[in-house]
Image (cartoon, rainbow, N blue to C red; front, side):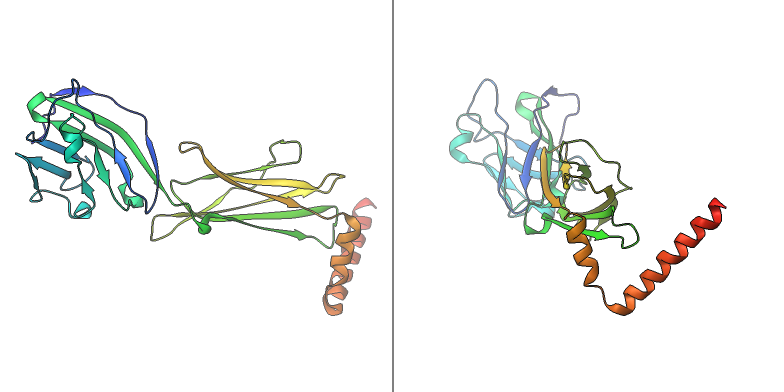
Length: 253
């Protein structure tokens, strides 16, 4: 039904939607004409069948419609009278992400809607933070940052209190059965007079981000944390420190 030699209009800027919400894919005929009796085809090229919504002679056709969209798509009859053939998509899913086309056979025009990004924003993608102190070297700490419930895949960056980027290890990425990503990252930092650090999880293409600020206590507070370690573990740590000191002396000699 699609005429690939038709006049193409677009593309338009991408849409960003939140999973579970309703969105409208805009498509306006130019010049505005009554489209109530026109054939209107909304398609998604990567689907099989590719038709999301088809309207012909004033009736919605479901024969060739992709089953993933049944009951979730609609047009406004009042807006059709003014050439507005925008498609309402209800309860969007991550799998709805992608490129859509609006085609009007009577006008031989194919209106592009470039791309839709569906992302999950919920309590899931809050950032969990933790820092670990190495009892053998209390001047350095390891910071951990983890966040879940993202789509598309985000990146993780670390910054110090002045906004300088910190060099971290490779980000660990896990994609779940719901197509959402969980990312985790860690960085080891030197303790200084200002021990504030920021972990930011961001998606550049959707301009979405979350961040958390981590304060690392000073040496005295760190020592208090070490004092809470059970005596048996403290003996092991003391022995390891002695062994490391002895090895350093042997190396210097």
